[in-house]
Image (cartoon, rainbow, N blue to C red):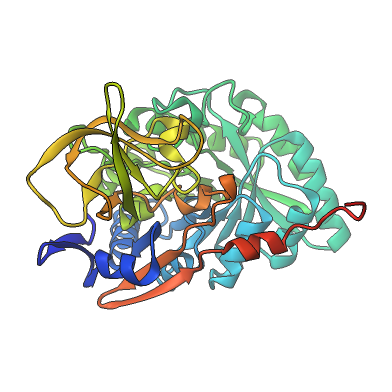
Amino acid sequence: MDHFTIRDGVMHAEDVSLELLANEVGTPVYVYSTATIERHYNVFAAAVSGLTDGNPLVAFAVKANPNLSVLATLARLGAGADVVSGGELARALAAGVPPERIVFSGVGKQLPELRAGVEAGILQFNIESEAEILMLGAVAETLGKTVEVAIRINPAVDPRTHGKISTGGADAKFGIPWDRVPQAFALAASQSHLRPVGLAAHIGSQLTDLGPVEDTIRKLGALATDLEAAGHAIRRIDCGGGLGVPYRADQPAPPSPAHYAAMVARATAGWRWRLMFEPGRMIVGNAGVLVSTVILTKEGASRHFVVVDAAMNDLLRPSLYNAWHDIRALRPREDRCTATVVGPICETGDTFAEDRDIETVGAGERIAFMTAGAYGATMASTYNSRPLVPEVMVSGGKWAIVSQRNQPEAMLALDARAPWL
């Protein structure tokens, strides 16, 4: 469910007209609905609230949307944060997420990032290699702090999602192969300033089949039981995230939070360990749209092109993953056409939709790319020296620009001529 509706013939975000925002802020522009973010978080948190010890941590995957206002909205609701870089850690802390609700994941954490996490006093690091155990152990010893860690396993399962967002296969770069986890746990326990307290797994994103997730959770439980039998104290199990959202109306809807929670309850029956979850896309995906203006239409040899002012640098997913985003006119109409929707960047891959049945739109009219709240602005770039898209947050009838459009002069200010030029 989202809060983007048609009122008086125009699409609104909650009580604010997207056409008004396009006129005031310019396009392209990302628009987020506070009510949608709040609803999705509350529904997920309620679904998992009674599992195992009754005190699960829902740590929002910051990579999905690191906007400070998005994070602050979630922090106010009690969400934690799953971060994968020093920058994301800084954002989570600045947004008001308590450090004891922050988990630091990622396969290639650098020494300054490890140091920042230790100094902040975060809840735990999810360790992804034996080398990282030694790196973090040395950092913690230097700083004189004891750090709690979980070992992220690679469960060698097929998550049945797009290959570029699959993270649980045997050949993936993520985690430690599950048959090496006992040795890794022992190595962590041997470090004077590390305290291994749990296990973690995350097998992929946009998951629509809960079977591989259940298999992974059961593997985590079996490993945890074996580790306890070997004398280790297990306190937490991080089940990861990845629950999908509906991008296309003509495809089956992904499992709901209630269905997901029922699966977790089945897989964790009898457990006493604290559970952790890292939802991202399912919290913010449907909470955002990218509003764009049609520059012109043109006829190719065999295609009708709609050229818009948004581009692949603003919303990369269609070019990177062949991902689908519904395209809707801000002012709905009955006339339809078959069109290829493209941006102005000098790449053939700057294509949002090929030969798609859409509402007929012409120059100057506005469209919205739906379900753009996750992996949208966060993956943007300044390719072709195009400015980053501004982001707007809506709450009821109020709205605010929460990330500015960087102008060409601001981008130029970051450059410097070599002294010999």
